[in-house]
Amino acid sequence: ILAAITIFLGHYAVTSVVESGRLVVATYDKPLMAISYARLAHTQFTQMELAHTQRQSVVDRNRWRLLDDRFKKLAHLLSQSLEVAENRSISAGATAAVKTTRRAIDQWNEVRQRIIAGSNSPEDRAALEKHAATVGSALDQLVELTAQDGFTHREMSLSSIETYRMASIATTIVALVLGIIVAVLLARQMVRPIAIASYAASRIA
Image 1: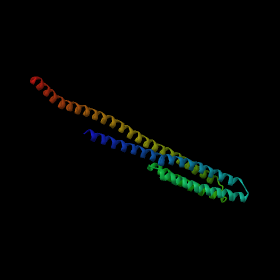
Image 2: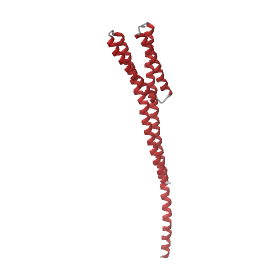
Image 3: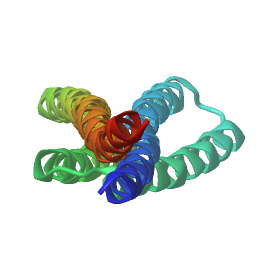
Image 4: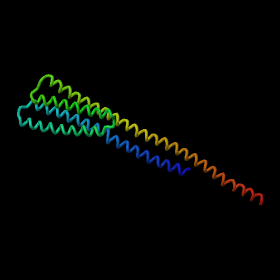
């Protein structure tokens, strides 16, 4: 019985450590990376807005081409960042936030292209600002949701460790009690024959 308890405790310890390690790795690989790439996407979109503003303020066509190339590169990097954030998201809400961000960026880019083409109406400028605000709020929501997912993983890891700690204490107490009982029984089984033999020897003497 004691050997079985020891084997069970060792197996449970290994399982708990592996599970806690898996949760820690999952927390880094998914929610924390999603947060990092969501923030990176926010920075890249801000740089795209800056490139658009600069494009509107310059008249040199060579400068336009440079800014357009920079804009395309930023758009590509932004798409990659959103893809990583979506792949690392572990909740439906976070995935929906990424999709909302993509739609808002597409709408923002459509308005931006109209403005570049010469349609610089107040409606287009207002729509551009509206879509930009939607992108920012969607990315903020993505960060918040993935932070909650990371907190959930953290709580699961702590709960696994606490469960192992309590099980270890309980199992150790049970093993100690069984050990004492076994020791007492063995002592009685050994002492009684010796006492009888000693009594018999005393009578013979």
